[in-house]
Image (cartoon, rainbow, N blue to C red; front, side):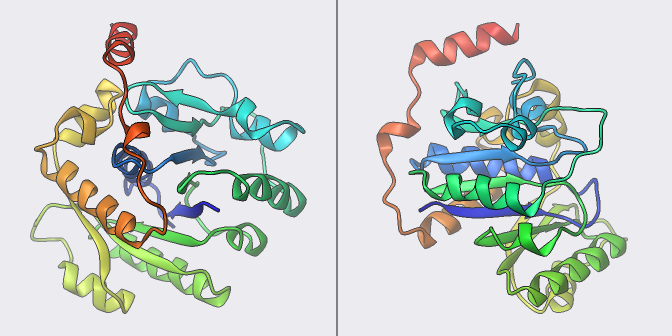
Length: 258
C-alpha cells in the first residue's frame, strides 16, 4: 500500500505546489515509484510546473467518471514521475464523501511507494483528510503564514491526522521569523527547511522542476534532503530501474519544449 501524503497550507502563495512537484520528482529519481496528484480544484498548476499543459484529463474527470485509475495517469517523461494533473473548470467543484472513499480506495490498491497530493489552500472536510497517512504543512517565515499553518495543524490534530512542518522561502530577511520561533509555535521540529532561491521562479518559467534544472541550487539540495528523510522512513526498497529515463525520452522531452 502506498504512503499517501497531503501537501497542505492554510494560506496561498507559500510555495505548496513547488514543494509537491519537487519532492515527488526527487522521490521518483531516488527509485521510489511515485504518483503526484493535483487535487487543487480551484487553481491546478502541477501540469504547468512540469510542462504538461497539453494534458486535458485530470483529477476532476477521475472523480466524475467510473473508470480505471490508469486511464487518467500521465507520465512526466524527463523524470518518469506518474501524474494525475488538474483541469480548470468554471463551475464550482467539491468532492463528496462517497467520491473520496472510492478514489482513495483505488489509490490504496496501487503499487506506488508514495502518493503525493497537492491540495488547495484552506481547511478540508474531515472525511477527505482521513484518507491520508500524513499531511505536510507548508509555511513561509511570515507572521500571517505561520499563524494560519498553526490553525491548520490544530484542525488536523482534532481528527488525528499526522503532520510534519516544512518551512519554505527562508531568506534570512530582518522581518522574517527565525525557524526556531516557528518550531516553538508549531511545538515540533520542521522536517524540512527550504531556502529562498532564484532557481524556483526560473524553474517555473522554464516548466522544469528545480531539482532537475540545477542540482547545485540550495533549494534543490534542501528538497533532495527532504526526500531522503522520507525515503529513510519508507518500508519500500527503491527500484533503481524505475528512476532511470532513457536518453531518447529526455531528448524528445527537451525537443517538445522548444
